[in-house]
Length: 374
Ligand code: SF4
Image (cartoon, rainbow, N blue to C red; front, side, top):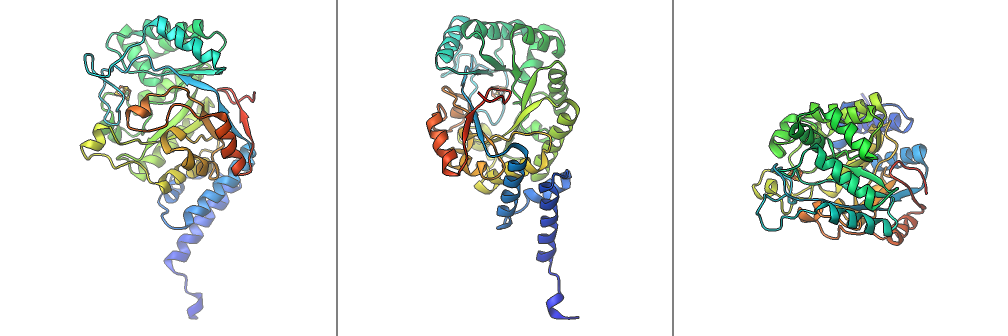
C-alpha cells in the first residue's frame, strides 16, 4: 500500500464534519447525532461550522440584522422556588426583595411607551400570593399604561403556577391571559429540557413534558412564543442536542416559535456555582457553537438571536457572524441577569447596534415582536 494513501482518523473526522456541514448548508435536516458531533468540535474546525452557519443564515433570512425596542418590567423578585442558577429571587422578608403594585406597573408601562418601545416583557418571581387573576391584572395594568404596545409576558412555569394556585387548567390560564391582552409568551423556564438536569438546577420547575405541553397549548391558541436554552452550567453536549431536538419537534408540530434565543449561563451570584455544582459559564467556543449549531440544526426556526445581556456585546457581534440575525432588545431595564452577576445589562442604544452591524457589513433594521419590519 502506498504510504501517501493512508487515511488517518483525523482525515476521516474532517470528512465526516465536511459532510454534515455540506448537508446543512444545502438545507438538509441534520440529526441529533450530527448536532452532537458539531458541539464536540474543539479545534480550528469551529471556524468551518461558524462559516457554514453564516452561509445558512444568509440563505434563510438575508443579511439584515434586526432588533426590537423593548422594556422589561419584572413585577417582583419574591419567589417560592429556589432554582440553583437564579441570583434574582428573594424570599419574603429577605433584603433586596421588591414588589411593584398595579399603579407602579401602569407608570412603568407608560414610561416604556414614552420611550417608543413596541414591546413590554414581563416575567417575575412566583410570588406566594399570586394566582391566575394576579397575572391577568398585571397584563391589564400594562395594557392600560401602554395601550397598543405588544405584551410579551409569562412563561410555561408561570402559567403552570397560576393554574395550580387557582385550581384551573393551564389552557384556561392561557385563555384568560390572551383575553387580557397577552401578545406572546416568553419561551423561558425551558433551561435544559432534560429532566435529570432540571432535577439538579431547578427541581421546583415544570417538568420537560409540562413545559412542552403548555408551550404547545399556547401555540395552538394562537399565542406565539420564543424558544430558549440556558447552557454552560452542568449540562452535557448530549443534553444540548436533545434540547434542540425537542424544540424542533415542537416547531414541526405548531410553527409557533418566533425565534430561538440561546442564553449563556451567568454564574457569579448563583447557588449552583457557589456550591461547585455548575461550571463558570460557557466558554467563547461554546457560545459560538451554540449559535452556529442552532442555525444549522433548527431548520424551521428562521431567527436566531444573540443575547448581548448574557454574552456581552463583543461576543454577540461574533455570534452575528456565525448564524445569528437578531440582536434582541434595547431593554431599558433588566434585573434577572444583573441579579446573577452580569454587568451592563440595562440598555443597548440602537446607535451602538448600528455600529456593530455596520462593522460587519450588515444593515440594522427595527422589527416588532413577530419580526415584522418597522
Ligand atoms: S428562576 Fe424564576 S422560578 Fe426559579 S427561583 Fe428564579 S425567579 Fe423563581
